[in-house]
Image (cartoon, rainbow, N blue to C red; front, side, top):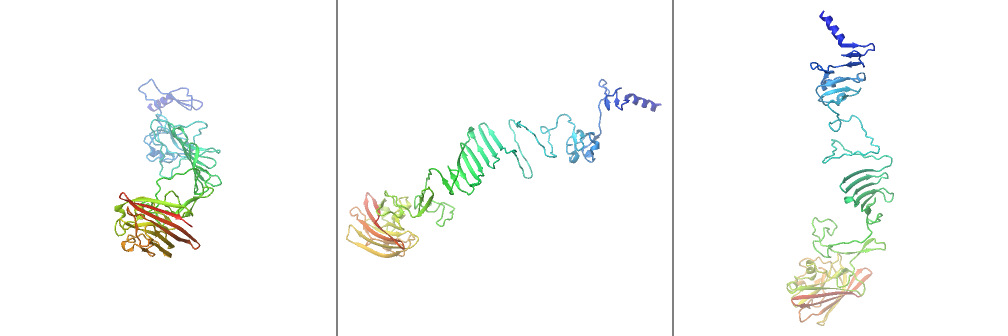
Amino acid sequence: MKRITFLVGILVLINVSVSAQVGINIGAPKATLDVVGKAADTSVLDGIIPPRITGAQLRAKTYTTAQTGALVYVTLADPSPSGQTINVTASGHYYFNGTLWLATGGSGNVNIYNADGTLTANRFVTMNSNVLSFSGIDGTMKIDNDGESELLIDAINSNTARARLTAGTADLQIAANPDGNVDIMATPGGTNSLGFGTNTGASPSSKLELYTLGNTRMTIDGKGNVGIATNTPTEKLHVNNNIRFQSLPLNGTANAINTTPAGAASPTQNQTFTATRTVVADANGVLGYVTGLPSTGGGTAPSGSINIGETISAVYSVPVAAATVASGGFRLGAYAAANGLTALPSLDGIQMDLLGYNSDYYTPIIINTSSAAQLISYQTFATQVNENRTLLNQSLSPCPFNANTFSANLWDGNNTVGWRGVDANNIVFWNTANAEVETTNLQVQVNANTYRWYEFKWWCMEVSGNKKIFLSVTRKA
């Protein structure tokens, strides 16, 4: 009897219509399953409870398209989401879409703004003509990847791909153009003031350009030629305007450069700058060099050679105490180099110089400053006394400039040490009362077929505690 009553109760609660629609608490169901709760009855808890299962248990099952639309309630998130449960990362209702279990929404939308996720395939955002913007007060955009990372902006239909950073009026852009060129542009303050760009023109190819204010300022072409103020450099450095050099070392300055005489690099700036060539230019402005140093005239003492009839001169003032050091301790060339004075004349490898003998006398000398022996002839005469000296066809060795080269017992010098005294008795007045002019006519062989004739003059005197030294050279032939 109790069993019959139970069945009758169920039949009262469930109504099955002729059209196979099932209704609970409703006489005329309006769908396949129509459930009506008892909202006004506080003793009845309304709702439908689907199967309750953990994420791990759900992962252990394999669903097919036959179960598409199935609904479950996950009580615990899948601790190792993968496969069909890749998205089961929290408790809640999930439905099966034929491939994956997806959250029904729960307490709100789950998206990139409030939840993490994992892509299962490539995804695309079609922007049409709209703008995708990210804005905020403080924020960081980050790409974090264990492997190789790539941020790709792919312009299609022959358009330019451009990445742009702006802040206030500052603007930094990186652009890839359909013609194969790439540009990097910086526009601080709203002015296009700095840019780098590549140029894939055929001749020469693959140029790198640096430009400011919209104009190209420097170009490096595919051959490695650098152009300044020109887009088509023809040499390794092609400058189309004025060039200024400052703080260049004076010829003979010690500790001036980092390049050794052999051309290697020195770790410190401890090398003497010794000029042996002259920079010249052709009609197109291309620079080259010639061996030797030209005459500059006007009292400057160069090396190299001068033209016939040209005269160069130099003047020095040396304290008596420094100029009269005993035993050949004073040489004008060494004193000038040590004190940053004008270098002594050195023409075709023959330098005029002098040694201090004492307060009354000095010794005029010539020195072979070249790297090879020099064939010389000379004749000397002095104005104060009637004497002269002649030396013909002597091979003068290169002078090593050793400390002991100039000593009291070697005033005359010799061919082996690379220097010679030119006076007849090796001493010439340079005191206050007597100041004679010493003149030496010197011939030097430049090559097998070329000889040059120079006239060297020394005139020295003492004035107010200083030795005033005048040197001049004139090319005679």
